[in-house]
Image 1: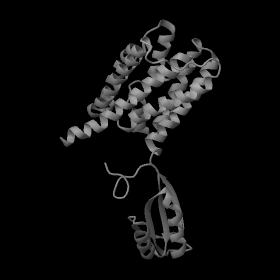
Image 2: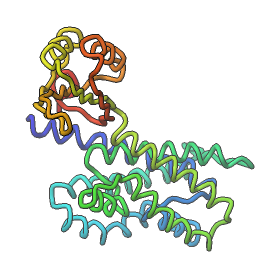
Image 3: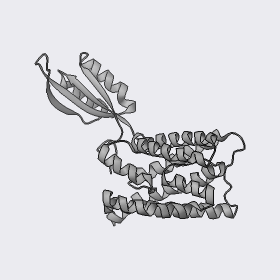
Image 4: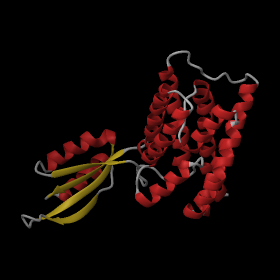
Length: 287
């Protein structure tokens, strides 16, 4: 039962993410003749050029990339990708039916496409970010991005932004340069939303404090902030003096309090503060 519950906690967000992404495509992108990157962008071009439905073309285009991902990422990873691909095609088909029956009226701008571009970026980025956050992809360059991220450590948002720019450049043969420029706004916003949901939806700060008073400082932090502290032995390279590194992770709202504590205990302490995008453990987040 616990394994099934854990799987459902992964699958349901993927379904929600693909639903948001499909909505963004049909509600903001297609009616304003904007573009999208990756395989979905190719599907959008096929829709503009030949009237192919997005639901069918995205499914057909993703089949070879799915097998590539199956080999590179492994069976476990691609199970969630398969769910993403099928659910995306399903939600795209649902949106198409709702629009055909006038149950969903897409947003079509008459002159100011910036509003459509902005909201398209937010919805597409939110949908993809949720899917990525829970280990899935929607196929296409998402698979390529995940493979490169795993091997090179580059963020998925950056990879997708680069690949999308190339594919969108090709769309100049089919849509006006004005629409392409608006599309680049959409892609840029979507990439930032993806990275935010992936890494920045939860953020904390890690303090590395080099001090002569590690014991006193760690005790004060434990009592006043109720945070775990790690003491790491250290030695000054120039002075040769023995010191300690006090390592502690705190919420953003606790940063000022921790700085004050350090200055009270050891005004000469050297403090290094690093951004932390995800924390698992007591006092933060449990998985």
